[in-house]
Amino acid sequence: MRLISWNINGGFPLAGLEPVTYTPEEKLDYFITLLLEQSPDIVCLQEVHINEVRSQAEEIARALGLAQQFVTIASPSHVDPSYQLANAVLSRYPFELKAEICHPKPRFELNLPLLPDGTYPKVHDKVTQVFKFETFTLANTHLIPLEFFGASYESPKGKAFARELELLWLEHLSEPLLFCGDFNLSAVLRTFPELISRFELQDVLPQESSSIFNPERIDFILASSQFHVAKAELMHVNCDHALCLLDILS
Image (cartoon, rainbow, N blue to C red):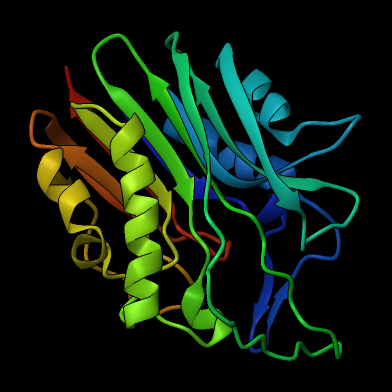
């Protein structure tokens, strides 16, 4: 089984790095082409666009021949205001939705940085999707980047916030578990110790940066020890997040 997890930034590739810029128009075909080359069985997406007339997840699923799909809307898009941001799971295998977990909001003040256009960023709502497959549970998440807002998951308030989220996960997850997504922090194993311990989760991806915004890896695929990992890699392409790939032996 091949699993891919990827934050696709609403389908906008990079146009430049110094400074960081994106293509002026969406190029979803670029993302679809890269996914087609990998022939995945399950795709977990973060920051996928959806509105009343169009779903990027549906278009990707159709192109990849993945008949099962589910989209969970999180918040208005910071990339294109005509869309909503969502998490999505596309699959070759049937699954059952177990939970859509709306993340709590931080109960402390955040220092919002002034953006180049003179406005302040919005704190987006985040979600975790939980699905039951025939032989395992899959979770797809996207966390708020506290460090971007002048806070830290390592601070007392940040640790309390992380614990609140961890307790929600523990309520809905079961093993064996595959837990993937854009965690927006690098110290996942230290930040969610009970989650890691209870489900015997292993960080299977290479220890290298997965995002142009952080020198450490912030995208993860965590796998319970019951899984036999054949291959795990990061594909660094023309996007602000790497494509995360995992092959599991049946």
